[in-house]
Image (cartoon, rainbow, N blue to C red):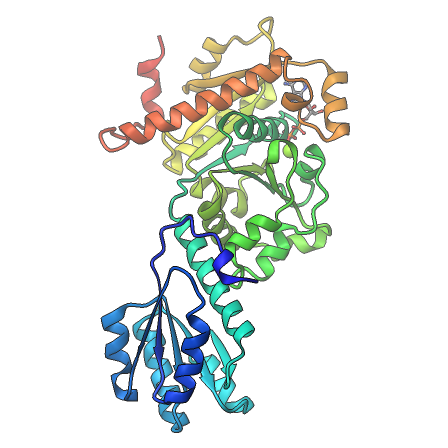
Length: 410
Ligand SMILES: Nc1ncnc2c1ncn2[C@@H]1O[C@H](COP(=O)(O)OP(=O)(O)O)[C@@H](O)[C@H]1O
Ligand SMILES: [Mg+2]
C-alpha cells in the first residue's frame, strides 16, 4: 500500500525519529523514509546513551532504532523506551534474525522487528499501518456515545421490537453510527429482526477482547436496516456461560469509542449481565404493557431500580401496545407506579407485526408511514433531543430520586 495515499483528514502531526549509530544503515532507512509526504523525519543519535533524551526532546510518533552491536544494552534500552514513552511506537532493526533476540525485543513491547538491510515495502507498510492506527485512535476521541438499554420486566412485552425500531429510527433520523447489541444471550433474536447473518457473535469478541483493534471491529460488524451494526448472540446456547459481566464492561467501553448510539436489548431478568449493561448505560428504557402481570413486575422492578439508585434522568418507562380503550389509563398508571411514563407506543395488528419479523425488517423501515413507525421515529427524535438537553443541563441539575415523582404528577 502506498503510504502517501493514506487518509490524512485527522490532525496528526506525523514524525519519525531515526536513532541509528551506524551511518550506512541510517542513510539507507532515511532514503526510504524520504518518499513519505507530510512526515517529519528526524535523524539523530550518535550514541546509544542519548536515545532516551532525544525521544523526550522530539516527542515523535514513531522511533526506528537500530540495535547496536551490544544486543543486551539495546534490549534494555527498548524496555526503558516503551515504559517511559508508551505513546511512541518503536520499530527495531537489526542485522540478525536470531529468534531469541526477536523474542526479547518483542517482549520489551517493541512493535515491529525488521531485518537489516530494511526492505522498502516492509518498512513503508509498517509505518502506514502505525499512522493509520494513530489517526483512528485520534478520531475515536471525538465520539460522544450514548448507551441505551431496553429492559422488559416480563417476556413478550415488546422489548426487542422497541429496541430494534429505536435503533433503526435513530440511525435514520440522526445519520449517526448505531449498533444494537443482543444481550438476551440464550434466546435473543435481534439478528433475525434485523435480517443479519453474522460472522461474529459477542462470544468471538469476548474471546479476544484484549487484542481487538477497535476500528477493525467496527468495520467488520455486519450491518442491518438503515446501516445499524448488529452484535448478535453466540450460535450455541451452551457457550453463553463463558460471557461474564466483566466482558460486557470491556465490550461497552470499546463500542463507546466508535459508535454514537449503543442500543442494548436484554433478557427480562436482573442477572449479572443485564445489571452490568444497565449500570454502564446513560439511559435505561423499561418497556412494559398495561396489563396486571406486566404492571405488577414493573412496580417490583422500579423498587429494585430505586435501590440501585437509578434516577429519573436515567430510567424511562415506555408503555408498548397502548390502546386508549385500555382498562388502565396512562395517568392512573403513573400514579400507581409512582413514576412518570416517558412514552407510549400504539398497538399494531398482528399480521403486520409478524410479517415485519418474518422478513427481518423492523416495522419502522418496512412501513414508515404507519402510525406505529411515526411513533418510533418521534421517540428516537425526542430521545435524541432529550439527551442534548440533559447534557446542557447536566452540571446544574441536581439528581432527583425516583420517589420525588409524586410531587410532579398533576
Ligand atoms: N406495538 C406492538 N403492536 C403489536 N404487536 C407488538 C407490538 N410490539 C411488539 N409486538 C409483538 O409482540 C410480540 C413480542 O415482541 P418481542 O419484541 O419479541 O417481545 P420481548 O422482547 O419483550 O419478548 C411479537 O410478536 C411482536 O410482534
Ligand atoms: Mg426480546
